[in-house]
Length: 518
Ligand code: NAP
Image (cartoon, rainbow, N blue to C red; front, side, top):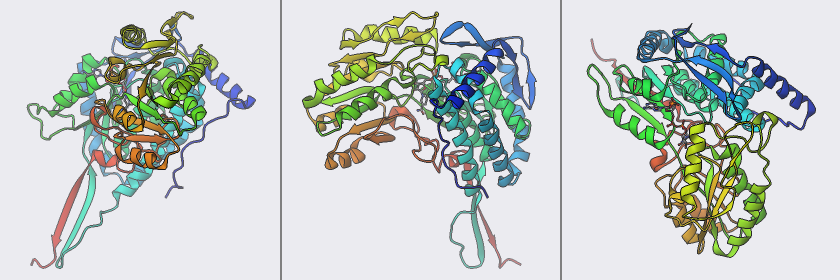
């Protein structure tokens, strides 16, 4: 019913018309700075008397907007609203639901630069990073609309003589969606629209650092014709309402992306059956990484170094897929290290609004935490670049930081820092490099730069990560092209943007009718 899915193209901002259009979008968002927004329950925008301020990490004195904060009462009402909307939403023909999705994607596409500009201010993403995030959000909606239609078809099972046997997938109920701040458009919208297009209803509890982009999403959801109560939006601190939503007996599933610490907390709490609860909750928990790139002596060293810099320092290293370990075989260690240091030191630091390659980290807390990890790292590795805060407009800037000669077992090589910090590790040879790469509790992304066919094949088999990239950067998974999710402590491997994603939020029902009965 729809044309085949294809990922959104990115803009060339050297084109003066595109540049002017993005600047106009930035000015538009800036003109609304300080506005107050409500939360959304059952299609109604509500004030609560308390709010969360979303600030510009490049100039923390600037408030992008304030959003009403929900407490336990709002969480409760939102879950009730989601269940009230479930019977009619889940029983609508899948084509109707999918059309609302495709309409929503069209609205998002029409407002692409505005959405991206919100992220530039709210999350500190430069133009390309912000646009890529919005493009991914649009891709999720388009792709999942098509997958919903595909999954509605009866399954290919055998009918025995005298009976009709049929199996099909049905939605599960009302769930809770808890995204992180680092892809405030793509992850929030993808984690919401997957379950919703599969016929479920949801309560979104956005990340407290980035609640404004979700407000704009909710306006577009309404414009697309989504019935009230299908998507409810309740900002509030994880501590205040996160546990309540996760523990609630009416929560059918939890769709979470964030840190290992909170993911494990949700795994434990959602496994406990609350009084009155009629099901075992499903919990999808996508967590952190300590992602490695290996470069061997046969590789194109120039390309490898450039992609290592992109993978480590794009969006200030605040991607779950970012390279935080660079594993170099001994023969080319010094050569590649020099190239990577040169590449990273040439990155200019400045406001995302002005499209600098390196912007601020998300918050004062993150700034402190990354600096503390850098300080601990000084005892573990040889600091060859950066290591300090950058004083600019009061923003939370950090220098791209590189530690060399890091031991594979050191904290620098094991603990997720989630900032612009790269640890460079020396390996004896390719075998040693692969052992080091696999030697963490995580297993999200990884990469190999090599021209050796045998090693590439071994990496395909033995590099134990959910998303492996060969001879390219290790970030930027495309919806429908590289289904995304990790192994081990990186999570439950939901494979967002993959053909089975919506299946996670559905149950299979088998029906047998016997024809011979009187
Ligand atoms: P986080 O601190 O774990 O927060 C994630 C979400 O959980 C936020 O909405 C947060 O709300 C909420 N939360 C906090 N405490 C909670 C509780 N007790 N119950 C329920 N929800 C609670 O993670 P983050 O700092 O936003 O994101 C960075 C992390 O996400 C990194 O570890 C990164 O690797 C990971 N990540 C993983 C993927 C992936 O696909 N595997 C993708 C992106 C990011 P508040 O904001 O109100 O605290």
